[in-house]
Each structure stands twice: as structure tokens, then as C-alpha cells.
Length: 355
Image (tube, rainbow, N blue to C red):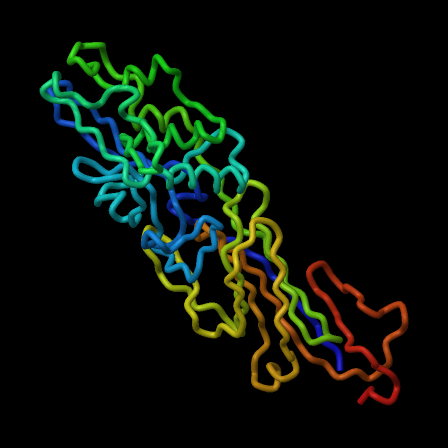
């Protein structure tokens, strides 16, 4: 008996935030005497709507619901926190998807950037800008980090939405605005003096950042006939979000419609899963008996890898059992007949086993 394995690969790059740590933007109009379409900014957090305790500092994202979250400075009476992506959008149409630095961020930089933003949880939102003498939108008040007194008590800072993005990127070595430009973050200074049209605001920040080029995880599925194991290798590359989970399905993947024009795999037909995060290459090797699946009418195995942003890589292994009528020549063992087609012979094939 021999196994013919035919493989097909695909990728789904779809996250509304592109990759973790990217900045996201949407419209916001301020109806002041100096009307301005300034926009709103946040940091894309991950593919799951999270409670405060749901994602630990080691970035172990468990059982994502693929509804997505941001970290943002929300508005008057609110503090910096993570929130569902739907609250960030607030029924507006998003400006593009994720934005970042030219050349992208490494997964290590992404994780550090998010942790710097998380360290600001509880910081208040400074209130704009009318009447001018009560203006709180001045630098550095729009991006003042939390700090601690000698007794270890937190002294909360304050952030405007764009200030949180700029601050977090600066902590990993990237700056989009000069100190003078950040000073010009509203029409008035802290004393109510007119200083001119703003230079630093969310839409201006978006225009200085680079649209992300998200990538789906690279996935490869193979089969070890001697040990009856499927071998799945997943890698999100040097500039991705890191692998969240890898799952193995039989016959087909049933994709569910998610929010923000996304899809995600349902639990139907899943036969094995590994939900441990990995920044680099992740290998998952569940034991599978292909002959038993074939006898049950199953002829396809599909490996799906999700990154932490909800992008998916897919690789499919179709298998067909054939009866041998001759013993393979030594030169034919493990032969690859065509690209992406593999022929595997179980160990111990000899004249007596050919039927």
C-alpha cells in the first residue's frame, strides 16, 4: 500500500489591524470655533475581545474569539485601556487598516510596544479645548506617562489618542513628530494663547506612518508514514505578529463570517489543536492514522495557523491509498513525482507485503 499526498497552500491576510502594535485610524470631527477633521487613533491589540486579565505579559493568547481589540485613550471621563475594536470604530468607516513604520516592526518590537501602552492603563484623558483658558490639549499633557512615587503608588498620567500612539512608538525607537511639532497639538497653548493651526493630530500622524503590508503565516503540512504523524510547521516571519494557534481539520474547514469583513474557522471537523503561542517557527505533530481516515471516507487533512492578529495560513494534504503491484525500486523511495506531490511508502514494504 502506498500513499499519494497532494498539497495545496493558501493565506488569508485580513485583520482589521493588520498586525499587533499597528496604529489604526478612523474619522472624527471636532466642532469647535476652529472646525477640524482631526480623526481618532488607537493601537491594534490582538484578534480577541479581551478582559483586562485575558492576555498576560508573556503574550499567550488563548482561545481567540476573533472579534479584535485595541488599546486607546477613549475620551472625557475614560482612562487608557483596551477595548473591543467595535468601540474604537464607533460606527465610523476605518481609514485603511494598520499603519506602522517604514520597513515594519519585528515581533519583539511589537510586543514591547504593546506592553509600553499597557503600562499606561488608567491614565486620564485630557479634555479639549474650549474655552481656551481651560484647554488641556497641550504638550506634554497629551502624552504624559504613568509613574510611581517612592512608596510604589501609581501617579496617573494623561494621554490623548494620538499621544498614546506616538509615545508607544517612541519607546521602541521610532518618532514621527519633533518636540516643536508636538507643542503645536492644538490651536491654543496651556495658557489659552493662540499658537496657530495644529501640526500634531491623529490624521497628521496617519499621514506620516506607512500602511502595513500584513502577511499570513506560512504553513507546511507533511506526513510521516513510519510514525503515523502529521507534521505541521507554521511561521509568521520576522515582521509578523507571531503564531497564536495551529489546528488540524479533516476533509474541510468550515469558515464562519466574523466582524469587519473577516472570516475564522469553526470548530467543526477539527481533530487536533495546539493553542500555545510562538514568536518564531512552531511545529505541531499530532499522531494520525491515514488509513483509518481513508476507510472512514476522509481524504483530506487541512492545517490552519492563526497569528495573533487573526490572519490565517492554510495548507492542505490530500491523500490517496493505492495498492502496490510491484515493489518500488530503491531509487524510488520517498520520490516526489511532481512539485507539491509526495509519494510515501510505509516502512517494511517488501515482496511479501505487495498485494
